[in-house]
Length: 397
Image (cartoon, rainbow, N blue to C red; front, side):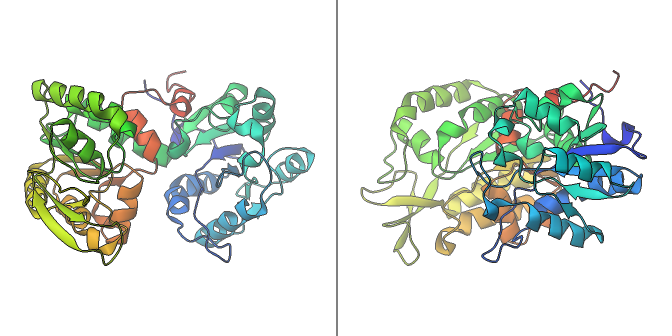
C-alpha cells in the first residue's frame, strides 16, 4: 500500500518529530568520522526547515544498553549537522522529560534540536508505550527517515505513531522503498543479484527470495564454501557452517529447478593465514587443499561474474567477495565493484560491507542507489513487512 510522504504534510509552524539514523562512527577525538548517514537525511531535514517547521530530531548511536554513556552522545552528530546546514542544531541533554519539553516549546519555525541518544533509555528498544507517548508529546507530526532501523519495532519507529495523527516517510525512506520495491515487483531484466559475506545462515531467506525474482544469483565470499562443501567440493580450512549443510543442499537442489541459476565460484584465491603477507595461490573448482583458506574469488570467477554484470539491466549487491579488508585479498571485491559501477543498468547496493567497499574504492558516486539499511534491506527483499514501514500512515487515510 502507498504510504504518506513528507511532501503530503503541512509543515508550517508544526513540531516535526523526525526519526533519523545518525548511528555514525566517531574518531578518537569524538568527532564524526563518516558523515554519510547525516548527509543522507539532509533532503528531509532541509525540507522541514525550509517550510517553516520546528524540527525535533531523534536517533540512537551505538549500543549503550539502556544507560547513559557519554562517549555515545549524539552531540558530535548535532554539531556536524549544524555545519552541513549552516545553522546551529541545539543538542538536548535527554530525549524525554520536562526540560526537553520546555526546550521544544521554546522553538521558533526553522529551528532544529537533537534529542539525546534514544537508547540511553531501555524503554526505546522495548517499544514501551509510556516512553513512546513521552516522545510523541514533542511533536505534532512524525516523519521516519531512518530506513536502517525500520526492521525494528522500537518506540521511536513504531510506538510514537500510535500517539500522533500522521506518520510520513521522509525522502530517504521513500527512495529506499521505491528502489528496493522495484527489485521485487518490476525489475528491468536481466536482473542479477550478487551475494557475499561470511555466513550463509544470515542470508538463506534473501537467497531463496532472489532465486524466485532474479535471473542470475552470483555467490561469493566465505558463504560460498558452505555451498561448495555441500556439493562435495573440498574447501580446506575455509569458513564453513556445519549446521547449514543440509539447508545448503536443499537450496542447491531448489535452485537447479528454479527460475534463476545459482552461480558459485569457479576458482579461488587461497592463503595459509588470513593476514597480510601470507603466501597466496589460485586454485580451480576442483577444490582447496587441506590447511589452506579461501580468501577471495579467483580470476575466472571474476570474468564469469563480470560478464553477467555487464549484461544486466538491474543489479543488487550485498556482501564482499572475499576478505577485502586485507589489501592482498581485495582484488575480487574491487573488480566486482568496478563492473557494477560501470554498468549502464540500475545498480543497488544493499548496505553493510558492500557500501564500505564501494566507498573505499571511490566508486560510490557511480552507483544508482546505496541503501542505508543492511539488515533492513535484506529483510525487505525477503518479502517481510518492516515494522517501521507498516506503522506509517496510509496515503489515502
